[in-house]
Length: 463
Image (cartoon, rainbow, N blue to C red):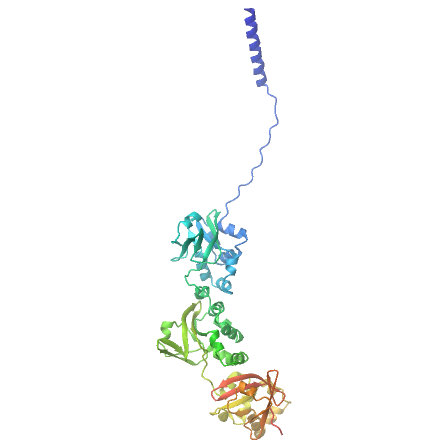
């Protein structure tokens, strides 16, 4: 009995000791909680594009079109995002033209946006179908070919499912255009002005160079509207050899010819065929006729019609049309570089002669050429009409002698209208000189009764 009691006592003692240990635990150091980082805010489609580095052009376009707030909104949106390389692949001048035409730019950007969040798996499921874009009435055609997703037959989706807080981005390798036309320049023609359209097209390099040389590019980029009958490069190439260079060197004549290809207003093909003529910006009429189903403008055939631009329309023609030539005196009066010559012709009473049937070839000194004469010479000549008449007639050769014919007279002479007097002709390194030191600087300004060649000094008949 005593043994049993002792055993119970020992057990109770152990339990009391254990309870005592729990009641007075040894304190341990308490670790302070780590400060929690601010949760990262979800990024919108615009935030992701701006921070990526591959979409700088797209972001600039979105900002220019004032769409940044829209695409940062709740959405959700699906954006097919062209890279910077995709924009760089557009025809030269296209991007600048779009940035200057915000409505057109906005349309193109909205054509890259589909309402809702359409993930890659969903896009693949639309093979052979189309997706409606945010541009009203326009959709993107979708095709799946060997696991590749292709939009509108030629634009590849290269990266998929870049998630944003308000939708998803799929990266594409070309800019989508709200048109099914194959030629990009034609796709964008109604979004660019006449000059930009001609530049982007590639068939009008000579016409563009001529427009720029004549200083008409700003005018044709203006509000308009204009109708331009545009000759192709082949049309300019079909002109007589040297004709283009001659006209590029003769800006007033070049301007006159170019303006003869422009009609005020936007005259579509259906309206053109109803006309018999149209007033051009150079003040003369072009004749319009329909022959065997072909539309002819002053004998040039209209081969492509209705290339619409932001400030008018272009009709392509297969030849350069030339305004009706004025006579030699009319051209000299209108040109502006021959005021002294015109005054001398009037003083010598030669106007009616040089407006006659001819033909005549006139070597025409500029005002600068007359100004280079010794002081008092012009006044003396104006007071001595017989001498003045002789000098003027010495600049006139009977017949129409074009530049190519003059070149064939190297080392020879040409008889002038001043009886018994002729002009010596010399060719040196492609330059034509008369009487050794007077240079022909512009050739082949054609008139209805002959041709004018411009010279840099006054010719004086031998004593």
